[in-house]
Length: 333
Image 1 (cartoon, helix red, strand yellow):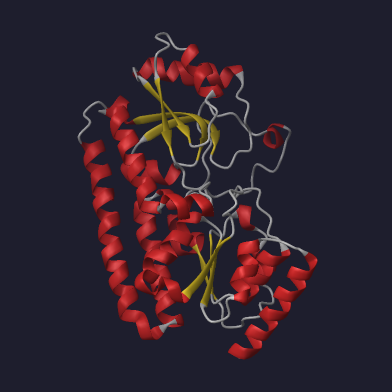
Image 2 (cartoon, rainbow, N blue to C red; image 1 turned 120 degrees about the vertical axis):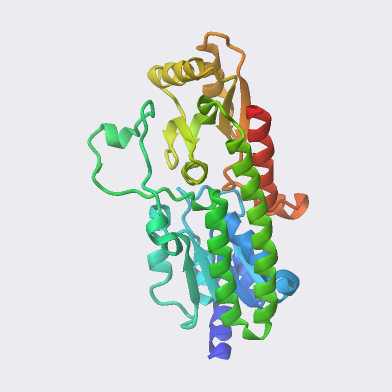
């Protein structure tokens, strides 16, 4: 079976190379026939697989599909990406509406023994519906009478350290089946990493528990809001310009004045944005406040890390969540 799969993969590589088609990393994955092949759609999953593999990471070929910096909500896989998925040993995806293409990718895989982890499925009833809070600007399609009754789950499940532990446990279980000879090592790697997640989780809890002013436990975000799982973990309130998966980039006058009013009402001297923001909305909100001196604080949603950044700068899921802790602590204390 293994030889047949590798032969099929080799044929795909030749076809894709001849056509000059698709993701180079995905093509390289198929060429590396001596390793365990893993394909991940998001950076957190990509990093978790590496962390759980630990000292055995060199025995893996791990493809990070969004490694070019593509957005999860608009990404469409290339032929090379689809081939890499079809032939991989483990595929880790979010499994939300943005990855509707996954169903087609998994219909008739070359590797019939492929293992699949859908993060949303791992959460089960722990998923949250994407929430439209007071002051949020609705997307245009909804304003024009789009399908509002369809349930849309918030896909940014990795922004919870509690969820991250569950996902790493699931990855460990699958690696232990795929490569049973190193099961003890994978389980030891998980135990070590789980402790690091728990320590940072406790730091966040201590931070918020130590704040007596309930108003200060409200995040005002002049951006879209991929932090639903984060605020639910710590019992925080929030207001934002757009929902988490919104494609909107221009905030209305009403949205700007609403957020400015919330800063004034709550007496906050900081305003949050998501990484990559040009600060235009944030600047407009601050200009509309009474004091006009709020500080802009960036939170990283860990969804736009490129493969190059991860390799050159040593960026990891934990390093970015630690950076978020430092940013939030600096703003609130």
